[in-house]
Image 1 (cartoon, rainbow, N blue to C red):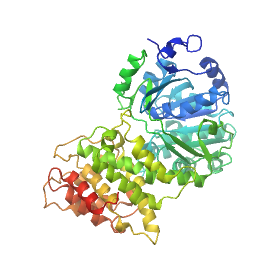
Image 2: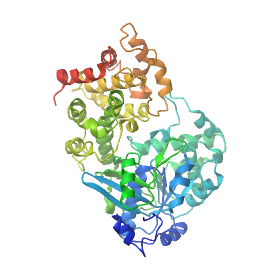
Image 3: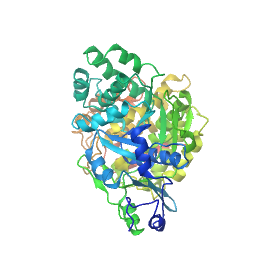
Image 4: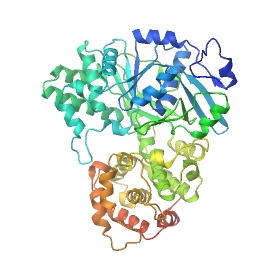
Length: 543
């Protein structure tokens, strides 16, 4: 059995026998150079990073185009660092799940892993020292949407944000407060330039990161923890840039099936870790073959030659067009709809949903019928071909063990982006009328139905983790299946009129009543969710 910590350079045979490609460089020398000359820090050491960002770095290091590795920082879960990074010398397997089998690569591009927050001062100080280094060029992020949240659904500051704005930066408890503190250290070290690159999966991610950091910084200036020059530093893109990006690679939680296959192939380190904070991670990451990463080329301190590892480097407008295409139209809305209805209909596989006739037709009508008409072609990726690849190749891949329950996580943070942006396009275009839409309102109704935590058979289920779930569940918890007397408008109105969720009051744009009607159809009796989808396709569908 081969271990991830075995000597892959001097004894590659066990890796070769296990079907694992190995790095072409010495990790110890890479670590030594990175300690002196750090270039790249990444926040969020989860599965997407391990299967995508780290492999990009490895490709460049293998080619001799990058001589520094990635330093991974996690501010949320110490077990991620202590259970799956440190024990394996920060190495892991990237497992690409092709239709015809697994492609395995040992990744050694991570040179250090750090758990850092106000509870772990040593880690925080170590990161601050790294941020004081002139060689540092970029920090990338995959911390999920909720990692940026400083306000609740009503626009009020969270308790964590209130704390960070009015207290010493070293005591920051939010992700954004911790990041702002690191930038403050870099500012004090000589106003050193850096690119802060959000690669999280939502629209205009760089803008959101910038606004969040500036919100914290303004509080610190107001309360005497930083000077005005810090705001000027953050506001100058020649010193601190916040590039926008679009990222796309379906990377589900580590699969028990993949774990067993790795062991059968002779790989010892394949045990999945389930942390106390409900993170599922392993010495390997499993991911799909298709992937895209588009980044705005704004790097005031230089950058690695990312384009040589397949990254599209372009201008902000093109990034935004590609992102809007994917996040708000051609992938994520389809994925989220499958997540919502998959939970309600009892599915535990996205691939199985993609083979279901009703659900397949639903996402075709959503993607081709309602989303594609408002998509601006980014030119670097063809939108219609993108949807077709998704529907015919990516979603049906049974080797990708993705579940609707995983995709359904944090849906309250996603629905406004997945559907609200497209709705705004319909509002803004005088030739289009949002009231003519059918599948988006049906899906939003499905989400409201999901919030009841009762499946289509009338059985209770456990919704996926979501920061606003408890608050939203309160509105619909008393609705019963078959209860025709329930005042649906009274229950749904606070949700559908909330502009912080959807960007619009859905009643004002002519959709609120339609969503209520779809919702009423879904609660008439057991099986009504499935019947509503089927009937809508039959009566309203074009695909």
